[in-house]
Image 1 (cartoon, each protein chain N blue to C red):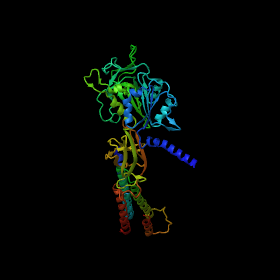
Image 2 (cartoon, rainbow over the protein chains, first blue to last red):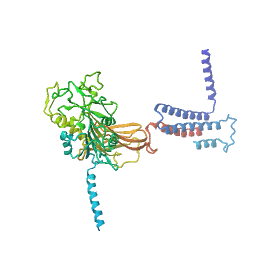
Image 3 (cartoon, rainbow over the protein chains, first blue to last red):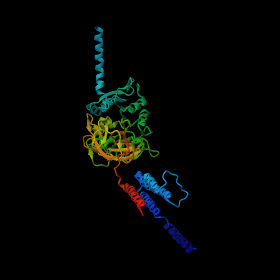
Image 4 (spheres, helix red, strand yellow):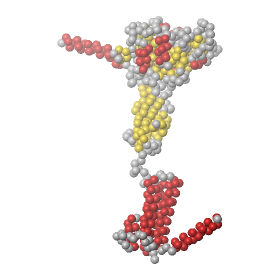
Length: 107
Length: 438
């Protein structure tokens, strides 16, 4: 049983990996950016756990800026993803440039 | 014109009468007593205790001798006290004459005035009652005297003339010169409640003393024994009135002042007993010629400034100083001591520092305000044996940092600053990469 569950995990991981490689490069760039932002936020939380929350305002500004930019990047990914058929944006802009411009302004 | 002349003459007469009262009243600036009423139950005490009274007169006291049952006795007239001190050498008086009773004497002490009370081989209930008001319990047995079979004076036969040398160790109460010879005592014993911290034994009996009737056989062990027996006690009330209670009137008499003393079992023979020095020094203390302190105002300010701020910030450096003077009998001298402390107090002392003195009466220290904000008090509470109690306080609030009083860049927050900047850099790089990748 153990062997089969580990084999299942390995199979699962391999299938995920192969599916993910099929995504377009631009989406992968966005994913990388999101991972970077969340990673930075997690580092700050770990630092706060170590040192204590003395300048709490600084902690909040650091974490929330990282999380905010991650969220905005995720929104960008949703809007840019061609396979996303539910999202028919009836927004002002319909092209890629407009979407990226919205992202830049939001950040 | 006749009316005008009469008016001016009567005004002059009245001012003549008032003038001595004004210049000799004791006050906050001049705390030594001046006018002392001496109550005697027998006018022969004036001559049998003449040395004691003449030392008082030579120090400037104005003694007024009256019989204890004189019907014109009064301590007050029209709400003003006529005397600053009271000496009651009337151990057998049952009732005072005039307007005096134990309640008026208690009010006299409550007003801050001083008292010397002495019992002798007999002590009436009135005297016992006054002593009880001051926290001193005379032996209930009215025929009991202090008997000591190992500390008696050799000049006496029946062991009731005690040669006592167990004096309290206090330079302020008994003077700087040590009393070498024992003090002769013949009288009744009293005891103090040990939880009462206002009374103090000045002359205690030796461990072999006890209180019993010397002329009858002891049928049961005596109640008062040993060093629990006090021969002379003092009380300093919370308003700094001072009371001396003695179990022996003969202690103040000329006969015992002049007599030599040799304690049984000791080879030392003294020409003169310690009584005169003891009584004189004690009277100096009780009438506020020694050990009376006065404090100036508390001064505090930040280091480097001279004005007193209305509010401190946490972690400020501040300096604190207070001026304390001691009355020398004639003038205010600077007080010198190394055990005065100041507390920075809010429900409990956050800072407790011993003040250092410049020997000119100024006591100062400096410390950092603690890292707690609230309303604090500078408190000086000084209760030294024999000195007046000092209880001074001054309130001051303490505030936390204002938002612009923190450091511009907090060192512990550098990772957060770094995170913000890397996020900005990452966004910049990402936007380029995303837009222009192939």
